[in-house]
Image (cartoon, rainbow, N blue to C red; front, side, top):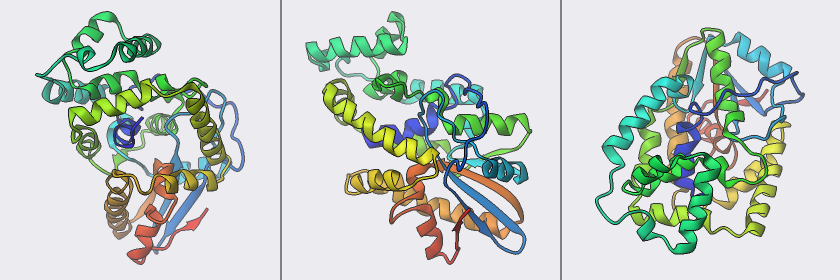
Length: 302
């Protein structure tokens, strides 16, 4: 799926997914983590993976200890911690921005694409009446409804997303969940696309050759699997590969710069915080840590 809609889905659909599977026991070394400290503040940072296979353990003793020490959890958007509120926002967004006055979705797709779309809808469990409504909405609504995991053949599921699990852990502790950005920022990544650009993203997924999909899943195995074991090289290679895409700066660089400002404000206060954002924001030359370094804020691996 195209980078821009994937970036929006990264936050928007996580909290709507089913409850994350409980992990039987922490695995070591767990997710890569960083720490920032000053006289009266401590900030733990880790990178999340939005889709994981069943049984992929990512918790560790150091993560659990850091989480227990923290007084608040910062995710990409605060709404990840409130599935009911997020559903209401998404419903209103579809009402406000989803309508399409032009041709129906099926009329803009080829016969083969429509057959593939029907199969994808079936995999995602979209009922016929909902599919009929989507016929007269912008393509991003269909992409959102299908979800990223409907395009994976090898068991990756949003319900296993780390963001989702951390939000639930915070709720169990009555820990406040805050957002590094407003959900409107996430939505703008998706709503800024033209209908033609949305169709291109949908077609790219529907028409992806099985061999290419398998290779992409192999890349996901390496990047996601390595990340949950504390390795960063494969995830960084994946980000560097996409560094020259048209939407890279909007998705990564600009948001990392904005988030560095949020961290700077956090350091001006006091206490212990736990930040968890997509792993892609914590690797490469434009990472959050690099943006913090430019502001004179040092982070170190934890």
